[in-house]
Structures are given as structure tokens and as C-alpha cells.
Length: 58
Image 1 (cartoon, rainbow, N blue to C red):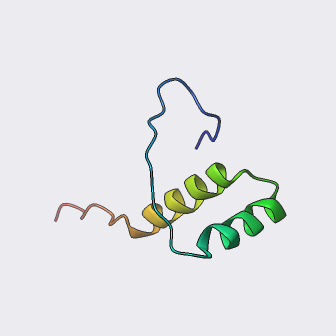
Image 2 (cartoon, one colour):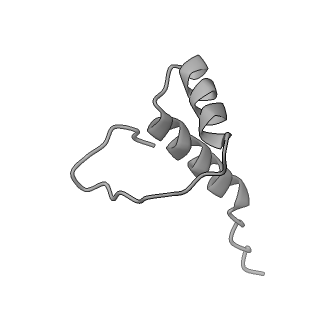
Image 3 (tube, rainbow, N blue to C red):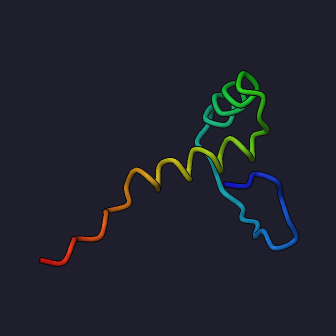
């Protein structure tokens, strides 16, 4: 996963519940990441966990 922005990256506006951005910023700072990088990392990891492996042919 490349966390460096490129001209091909898309942007989106997202609304966060009160306090969530503060929590996210604290974690990102402790990990040495930007808010954006932390969001991308967490979303990517979450989606990876949910991917269902393809069933093997019988």
C-alpha cells in the first residue's frame, strides 16, 4: 500500500462524530503518521480482514 498521494488519488469529504478526529489524530501522531495516512491505513486493514477468500473448485 502506497501512502504517498499522487495526482491519480481521489478525494472525499467525510463527516466524523464529535471526538473521533481527536482520537484519530492522537493515534496518528503516536505512530508518526498524518491523519490522512492513518485513515487510509485503518480502512485498508479493515477491508483486508473482511475480504472473503474465493472458494476452491471441487
